Image 1 (spheres, rainbow, N blue to C red):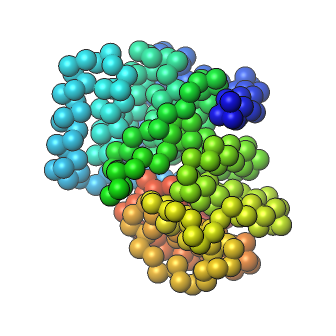
Image 2: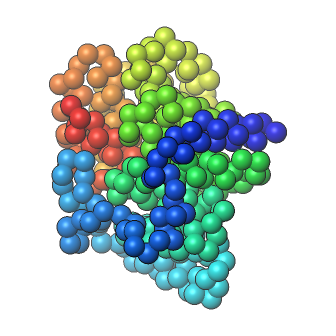
Length: 320
């Protein structure tokens, strides 16, 4: 019942804006051959950054290629199976070919137009290639499709050492919808989406990761006291399995970890990019913009351009 109420609330929240924008009709877009699935980019690039730089994927390792070949063979054996298609597209994305993954997920939407997972995964890759309006459209559609539906744990492409899956279809939809709105600086909608995911109460990892974004959003809205109050469910003794970076950031926001201890983090992986962006934002909130932008610019030269922290920092630099 709790999950149904949350899903209903989120779907209603975004339904009004969906009715007012052509970009919130992903089924129509992907089933109309005349409409492109993404914007043009320079040859060999996956995307163009918010700073105007062509973004090119690194060459995938053999393990990624082997996993892709296996997923492709399974898909070829039964291309109508939704899970076969999802894993084929996910494995394509893991090799860095986000545009091809979008094409496959679009095929999935044609085959399974009411399967929220297709929009959930395609929206993620629209974020990767900086097509944020399309990402919002997909996640609004996904949020509407899960109303009244049972939530299910979502397997990870790279499981943690414990082999414990930590996210669900619903939590991933709310999280990525929140991120999409965050990148558009639509703070209230971003806050409500992240909060809906956090309120699912899956585990401490999800509470910490959503809590990080909720705090930053409230600070961006100038609601500093409420931001501090939002950290009431964060503590040092939380059972964190994966999201140590977000947990460290939320503890920093509480004043339990000095910001300076996190500035030397390696931004060349998603967790490092998340920390670098969080610390940079902390400097902004505390009237140290030179430190903030210097840190963001420092990790613009890293290789993790598809990491959410990198994308958010890139957007911030483009708007300063």
